Picture 1 (cartoon, rainbow, N blue to C red):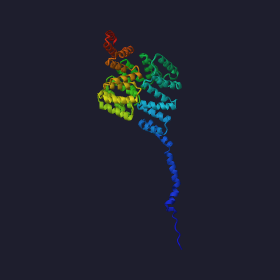
Picture 2 (cartoon, helix red, strand yellow):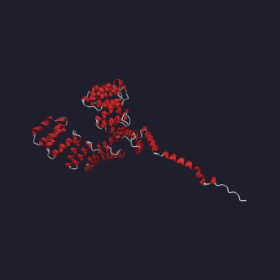
Picture 3 (cartoon, rainbow, N blue to C red):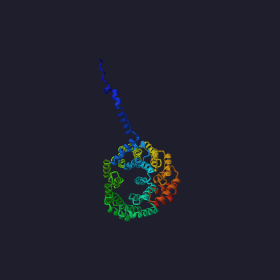
Picture 4 (spheres, rainbow, N blue to C red):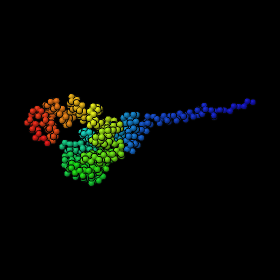
Length: 442
């Protein structure tokens, strides 16, 4: 009798494949779900938030940018990127992302306050004031908005309108330092130093750990030429401020103004050690290197900044200035041409290009560039003076006289304008007019 063949099913590879096929299909579906755009976005956003909270802004930037490649108009990612750039002092990039975030969430007060701060830095006071007022319309007791509002007003009417706005908020913020910081800033704007001092001292009494109060007391002391008190208050303001803070940069600037370059450098180096990603500290060190004629160091720092923040205005400007100082005028002109291409509406960029063109003996282009500056910013003093000097050199005297007369009228304390106007009058052989200008020169 023939023996029955044993079944091979349990050991057969084919049988094993059919047995596990449903499980494999489920696993592949699970893995595919984990790699879906939705899962990727959630992962990038969660990582970005984690790094942001840990103040690891470079790593947060990578995650948020990866998220935005999948969803370009997400308010959270745009907002956090903008705030991270703000913390790093990358203000132009911060503005771009915060502006986009605000378009999606117009009631985000923190975004508006950061935008206002950036706009004040760029001297766009009107738009900054609009952001502060938008925050106050929803929250009249917002102390930071009140302080920012006081930083945006200059004319008598603007100051009085801001004062009324601040006083209207007094019942809600009585006993808080922000009230006195805002009112003190208005008094200081009008050079009422005693009244400003009283407000700032009151703010400090209400909060002895207030960096802002110490900072404003430092400003009052500096105006009174009391550098000892100014140093104390600016130093305390810096110590109480976050590591990435404009007040810390201001303290380094103060040390530079009083001639203590060694202390300024040491302070900036300590900042960079604590927060290597805070670009303004590196920018100041590059400027110091330029003043000390350490051109290679200044250029190296500037290039490192640009590697971290492509298009950084200050770093691009510094590279041009380094080459001007080295008397490498062709390269300086190239650097400033790049700067103007990146920032076509910034008058100072065009002015530096005009200087480089003049040093390259291209007077015609320099004059044309200076005229562009004055089309952007008609009151740009350095450009008015340089254009008048170039017109004097080519004996085109009437436009030089006209621009200098207006400048002397508007800025009678400007000795250089008086001197150049007197020289221009003498070139026209108008000696009485030249003598009159000299008599009124400061």
